Image 1 (cartoon, one colour):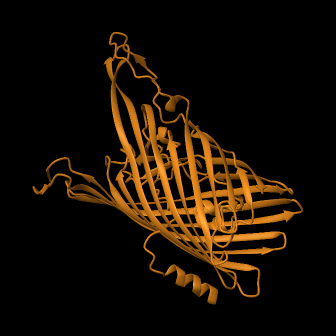
Image 2 (cartoon, rainbow, N blue to C red):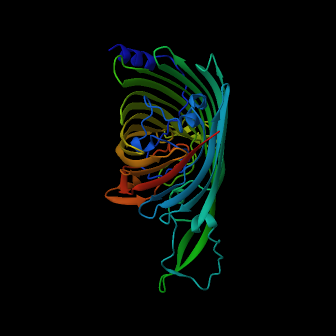
Length: 493
């Protein structure tokens, strides 16, 4: 009972921001693991992490955990994933190293990535173009036709203190992004899309090894996500009803997608007395600003800014006994978000009052109550280890929308679950370790809006967050995301 009280006390501490970034999502969109470029030993165990160490992944989440490295390692983890229903695919090639000494430690990773755009979002003419009217159509660009390349860089450095019991470290990451998977489906009926932007992530981490094999960690983080979408639409007008000739009109849009996140994370783990069990707890808080949200067709508010608070409170247990390792994480993620549309000049409301320039014409208030369960098992047989796991995440939110011009309001509730079974194996030799990880995520796909039984099929992609207000009940065409990763680790020095 005492360890459980310690975990609950940890969760009650007045920490005001969180380091592990909490993703907000208001639509069940199928998105690939574009940002999964890091090595991991627990990924095929459902990604359990609270009470089970992952010496390869942990330093990239909390750079101070690099101080726990027993040896220096070179690694590479090529990854490929596909999104069903012609939703896109990607291939990544990361390489990196982790190194340590008696006092200093550090590491880094670089990755090249090819994103293949899906083919569901782009309009293809199925009628005759009027031969009399000569309106040049813009060319299809490389993003919509072929693929784009992203580049990632991360480096960390840290220092140990108090005979290695304390560690302090910092990391910086930069991603040059020319594509975010699924964005071609953000804008249903678009003729072409050109994407460009970047992501920055800065972390400061601390770890402490306490008496009784207890550990404490803390992380501060700042993340900046910025993308530009130059979208070309072609509107068609029927000019000859006899021959069914249509005339095109070209329309260009520029959409900005920006999120600024600040956070802090606190974690604590300790063994249960007289057993091989360990128990841990986490508390995470994120403060997010959304200065620009793209004009997605699925929502009815253009370019609305906003801000969010997101939290997670989790408890994890693990057991390592002989050749068997087990882990389980339970996490609750409440969040609140407020977005709005700003008036372009003074606006008269339905009762005759005036909303000033830049005042709020429409307001959206989201209340999230998300939760996840991660569990996994490893069984070692001589040089081999076999892993199975499952991750289940439930999304649940309530939207309250207020139209300050028409003086009306509405409420919408959405719920769905994502299921991710995982599997993998590894073989360990004296001078290297080979790993395979497989994952398949279902329960999401290509959402659309259902009005009176009909649908508008507009799918949405991953960005820093997807905080948009659907303008009607959501329907879903499911698609499964399948990921394969083959990794190698080589100790050196």
